[in-house]
Length: 331
Image 1 (cartoon, helix red, strand yellow):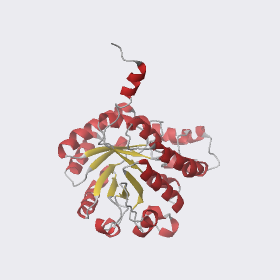
Image 2 (cartoon, helix red, strand yellow):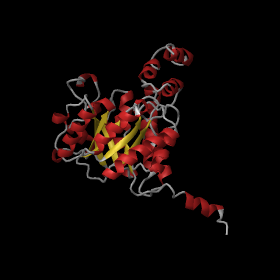
Image 3 (tube, rainbow, N blue to C red):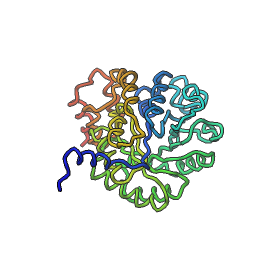
Image 4 (cartoon, helix red, strand yellow):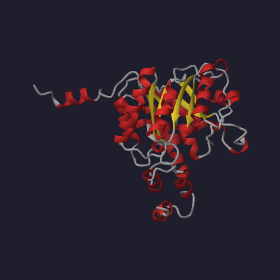
């Protein structure tokens, strides 16, 4: 007997539900790359409250970057995530929401600036590394693990990594203390078939070692959400997203779309929408994140979006042909 369409839809909407999936909001960390982390406390607190009320699993509140490399007077507080500043927002964080900060390989004084977990309200340290920085990343992972934190590693710009290098790097990472390894489409360059290939490779190497696989996507080709879904369907369990997609350049997978897809009753959309309406969208005209043609061009060319970000601050903004010619003049 054919199932009535209403019941068929009701059954199908739970296909994406998997209890083990964890959602990480990185609005303040990734979005801070558009304003040098100059968010005021009201915005950070609003994102925190929305994550708590929305049932989100993790919130990444910023970076643990080196004050020797980056002068604090020239950057926002969330580039450094000092413990006192975090506690101004979250107090003791007596909630189910876990907090994380990201430390970049070769940009963090992690031995001094990452406190023992017993002295911090943070729960997780996320290490970001390019393939050639993996030796440093391994030491950072061990340092954070030994201090009592959950750990993940974001292997950045994998669209530029040769297959042999990738396999060698993954072999090192799965033998570390890290809890999860992320597929990261830093330049928003990857299509679904490439996400499939990367996810398959990461899972083949990671799962036997008991490591989770995550996904972090950028939206240069308007595929951040679709590629995130692809990763989930294939087995990713740590999922990055941001409110209204706020993130570097073309931005990230929008968390409001992701929550709708996951159909997990622990997540609640309304707090996300309220935060977006009252705090995130009002910043769009100033921060200029999200899909546009210069970001599309860097995505197609598999280039870092820094050139497009710089171009969008000039009087030539909108002259996409000029930008395209400049980016391809050596081809």
